[in-house]
Image (cartoon, rainbow, N blue to C red):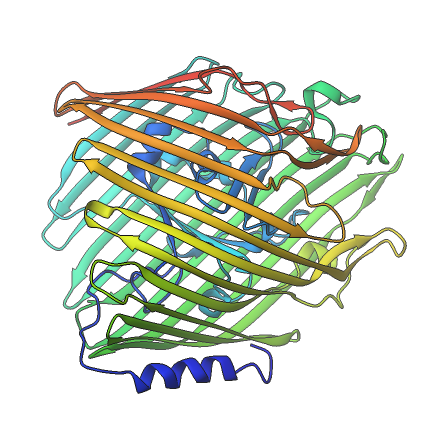
Length: 621
């Protein structure tokens, strides 16, 4: 939070204390993605469950995320291309990406810290949590527009089973997976591995992915201990981003890349029912990315030379906090230490290979506090503040405040929240020997949101939210000075409608609708004004489920070197699916994506796969 900006949070705090009474706090589990103390803040979080992911059988998590209200997610080059995820109009690198709380953003890449969602196998994911407002007051840097927390499958106490699955698609894409789960009283162990090959799923693009996961949980006294280990390896090829793809690229050579991801975490958390809850988590990750990008011939825009890059990035984070629950008040305070180390060895081909390497280390020390109060009469309040101090790089205050009111039991809940976010400049923007600028300031955001939510039994809800985001000091490349600079300001206004309804026990319907209004000095790419999805699942018989989905987006701006800035057409598509449980041990899931064979391009020159059928056979022993 900037100096002089405490009055908003002070006012909310004293308002909450004035209304305090003896109502008990809710008993839901804490969701750390959006808050350390507020278990179920109205409008604060959207969740994609494993069941929804299994129905879709996606090649990447982008397909599942694209159906979330306020989220635009797709690949800019097919299965082997780059990921683009935008929350409420923000840039892809404005979203903090977590894997069970472990940070995954890589600041050494030219995308400013964006994450490649093709790295994670969707079949290993238990749920995805999406926070659509700045959560820097909770997590610090990178959470400028929101956060995505990918929660991996975890063992359950008492379970013992061996699972195997095989997947095949009509375009030659295929996958295999196996897992071993063993549980005991108070804990369990899960080990799983998978392999995937995209085959001919998208023209001019390929992806091969291998992954291994191990997770251990055990109760020690009143604490739960968790150990997590993940290894991922992927090899990809695709036409370079902005090249015009298979349809327009003059140079038909592909970009080729190889990436590795290693992550490990250990946490010790006190039982949520305890009055005093000390918690400790340690997380380590390492990412390596080797890529060779061919030259892009000039078109309407200037071409680019061939590039090569070999980057390595590692991160270690330690977080310790103490939570306190007393009557209607839940509070926590803690500290964090973060060390990031990145190195890139690259070349640019100007007729001769010009070295463009850099090496940078960044250490951040943080202190944070948060409190939630439910004083009764349907009121709820949440306040959070965080201080981050970067060694030899300045400091940042961020804050967040939220309030909700449910006037009558069973009635709608009114909610509002305001927050600040920031993002430290990427290593690439700071230290690249040709365009880097060590004097760059952090990018900043301010978010305001208000809405109404009505909840019911069986997870039913409907939510309407209006929001306004302001981003400033955005980092951009200035061709006049040939360096990165802080200059742009962007305002985003919008509305979101999201809901889930189960009219009868055998039928569930869910949907989302988003509207964006952008105020930017230059058109922002890949942000349609309208976007929506509607999904339905019908349990036709005990062993048979039928499901269907439709989705659409309006037109939007895009750009490529052959065409310059263009307005891309919107599109709509429909999916059908079936899940059949042959026995307690065997099941078959089939999906037909894009039933009508709609032809469209998410990026200029990169055609959609068209109609695609996939089937997965799973067995448990």
